[in-house]
Every structure is written in structure tokens, then in C-alpha cells.
Image (tube, rainbow, N blue to C red; front, side, top):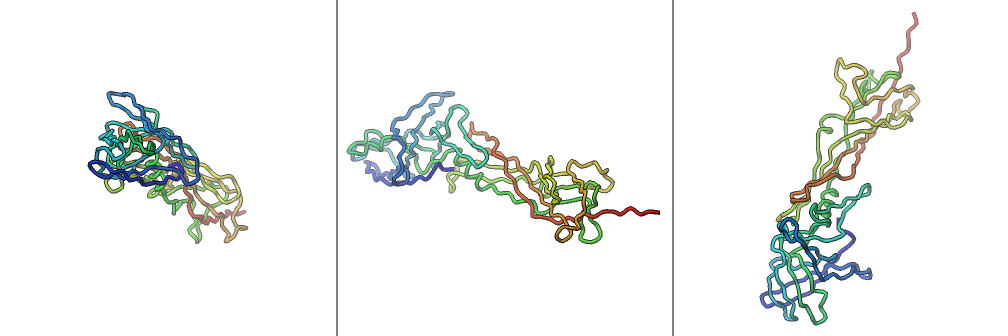
Length: 313
């Protein structure tokens, strides 16, 4: 997820060996601009130099070349492959409405960046009023793991369950649930045994890195429709099979009053499925982790509840 809006302002730089289109990331017009950070710093971890860049992201067009610009700027490749020589940016995170998510590199407490090609350029010695061009530039667009995870999460949209099971069932004819006898609830296997996943890749046209987001049904909540509290059940509930005992389920509700006074003579039942969610990526040091749970609701379903009259002899 991008942190606020970012706009790219083109600045044309003539070099001895080609033309670089420098894209400077800036904020919206009138907004307070982030502090300039032209310097970079790095240290060695596991034999690799890990370089930290400032909060402003800058980019050159793909196919950029090294050289000296007319104003004295020296352009050179700073990192040839950001998969083996990591680049970082402070303060990059993504979140949703329920739980914050920050994805730091395990070996460096900062979010990791990737360019469109893996190359990063250094601009130094820029003069003539263009000092802001000093710094580190990605070749092509750049993205962080949190932003990539956020994109996968935004795409992750499992449907709600369309079919719920009850026992006794309401067949619309002579079979219906009965007061004082536990009514079983469950979600059908076809839905429950599905894990939904979405992938976000970068760059989209020729992916170098990707992040997957997953959603796996975990628990259920049920509204019996008779005014009682919602029923929380582990898992999908137990599907009734012939010969099973009355207490063989972990998800049941006992109605105490028939539904004869309800619209259409039936209670309105619905289920809410809660999903465990998590993410994974193909980047070493970014193995994945949990995300905030999400839920989906079933359509309302009518359930008639009757009573069995005792027969006096």
C-alpha cells in the first residue's frame, strides 16, 4: 500500500552516453515535502553491504547508462542486483482496518526496496541549482515488500458461503427443525476445504519478486434467528450423517420456541465465516507472516422450527 499519494515529476538530464529521464517522487501540490536526504549509509551484514536510502524515492528510465551530465552530475551504477545487495527505506509499512502490518528485513530493521530491473544508480556532484538530484535512483519504478503484500491483500476477496447445512433440515415440506432438540449447523465441505490466494508481482510485465496472500476458513459464527446471541463454533461445524449421536457436533443450537409467529413462519439463519490470513514471498529474508483475519457472511436462509405435540392415551 502506497503511503499517501506520490507523483512523478520528470527532469531531463543530458549525459555523455545517453539521456536519463529522472523521475523525482514528490508529494501533492501544497503539501509539506519530506526532508531531503541526499546521503546514503550502509553497513555489512553476512558479507553484504546493505544500503539505506532516504525517504524520497527517485527513478531513472529503464536502459539508463552511466556517464557525466552537462551540469557535472556523475551517474554510475550503485547496486547491480538488489536481490543480492539489498536496498532499504525507512518507515515503509502497510496496514488494513484491523491490524497494522510492518515487514522489516530480518537482518536489517527497515523495509526492503526493489527496482524494476534490480539496478540502482548514484547521482553525485550535481550543480547549477539541481543539488536535489544527488542521491540514489532506482532503474524503473521501485516497490517495497509491504507495498507488494498490501497489493496482494487488496486483491484477496474470498466469497461468502452460499450453502449452509442444518439437521434437522427444513425441506420446505414436512421436515423441519423442532424445539428442545439440538439443531446442528455446518458449512459445506466444498467451501470449507478451499484456500483462497492472490499474488502481486513486480514488475507486472516481467516479475522479479512476488508476494502471495492467503485466506483459509477457520471458525464460524451463526445467528439462529430467534433473538438469542450469535453462536461461535470452531471449524465448520459437524456434517450430520445417518446414525450419528445427538451430541456428536461441536456446533448446535436448541430452539425453545417455534417459528410460527415469524414472517413466512420461519426463523432467518445466517453464517459468518472467519478466515486465517497470511502472506509469503519469494524474497530471502521475507518468508511471510500472519495478516489480520477477515470474515464473509452467507445469504440469509429460512429455517422453520416446529414442535411435537404429546399424545395423551
